Length: 233
Image (tube, rainbow, N blue to C red; front, top):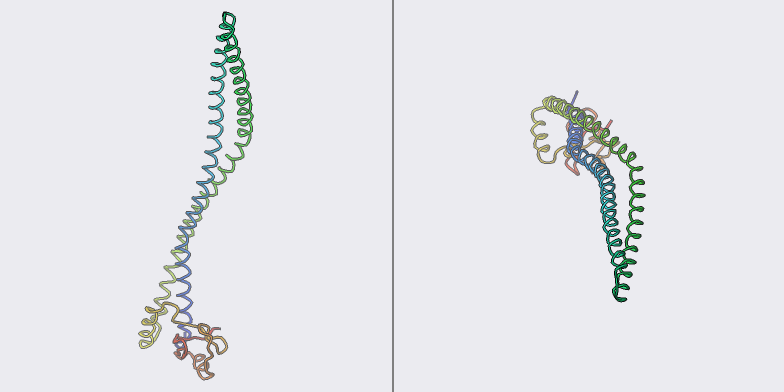
């Protein structure tokens, strides 16, 4: 590189590149968390599908037990009905039998409805399982790509940092002192390109003389915003 301005241009590029790499590295864990949450949601969907079938099956069995016990009550009360002497007792037993048979009918309807739901949900289960399997495979691939991307970004950052140090060393000693002070205070925002005659940071026009000196690589600072300038080619 000849002159200070082209060196500043390269330094600005490297600082912005490092800032972009840092942002990507910082963002990576959040992207992993999002993928983990997506997989966890799908795993929960599968668990809920299995739980729903299990719960319906359990409820159906419990109601079948209730039907059997109620049927036994009907038989018991029907026997008592044949042995009843008093009309009041007879009418009470008839009423109980009617209620018990009504309950049996209701339970049997609920059992049939539960069986239909189990069949429906069981038929849907393979699709949920396939979706979950795909989610697991996608996450495994994401994890692999994620680690490879992190390694690549870390490698890029190491190379960019080494290139930055090497480029900084080419600055003249007096300029390097100012550069270091500005970088420590403002980071890469202490530099700006010039396009045409406009500072791209504050959009103030510089003089033709300043532009000419920048073109020759002379160290210049924007008189409006105080940034170190270079020509944006």
